[in-house]
Image (cartoon, rainbow, N blue to C red; front, top):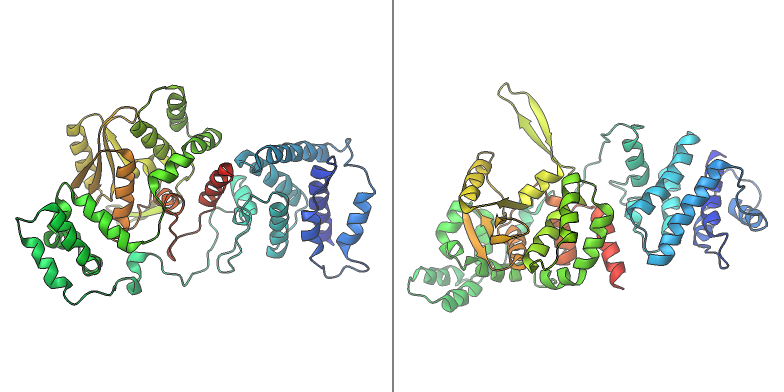
Length: 451
């Protein structure tokens, strides 16, 4: 009977949100009514509950807890009616109301119950994403809204066991992802690139005829061998060849610049709502107060601040001089620094890269000489190659494409940000993508604001 009492409270809560409206929304009732409970005698539980609630007044004002529920719920509902979406603050209010009741009753929830409540939330707020509250994948399903809240309040241990998945861990570890059909003459045609007198259009023509042969070679060889054989990558215009290869890896994708331009104003508004990191908040305030900023500066700063949405969850295994193992937990700053390196001068950039290389190979990233507000030079880094870019748009575009052409994994520190760029700005999904609730939330909010 405990489950029925808990669900009655949830039902009353959602009904209370709607009770002062002339036209009540019964999505929650329909979701609940679809479930027949065991050990409940007589007519269906929610049929009875609905008739009782319809004939009753709103929740009693003298019950302080329920009044707080009413106030918090009204805040959420009013925001939704105005914007047709709820933001992170509204989600926190919604989750807190439900979870506080669960904790108060010392109720051990089930996947079935959590799934029902998640369906009810989506029914009431159709622009929400169910994965925010409940993952339906049976192999890794978690009650997201419960786990997040209880972790934050120390009610459950931070580490929760995860079941193994048969899904390939990454594209670089998937052997089935290594072979592409090639033309029998591709290897011979590729030797024509050794002619030092070729014009750049001639290089591009040969390049297009040898794409699959080259991509297979890249997946089977290290960087030294790749750049020895395909030396044109190392030339100043080599980034154009990366572009050609990428178009063969993904034939259907959206344009980064176009999507960014359509969404930049909404991205700024969401940043203002969500940024909590102190340094990033100061950067955002300065950004918002400045006028006549260059397009490059705006693009760099917005993309830099994206990392505040995606607090890194990955950890790096380490071993000290005594052989003792440990872990490094990454921060927002680590994520930003693995994504975009900023130094005041070219000399300072070389010293910074040299220091970074002491910790291992540097993964593809953007280099900015000057500052985010006044970039003197924008480059893309690839294994000691530095492509000079003439716009921030093109820099982000080429850097993203490098990961896929050269079959390189996203950095652990900023992997979630690169995945968001992949799925939102390029509309590319692969079987190797890891589910990320925050990415889905941000994408959903942005798409809703465009309607």
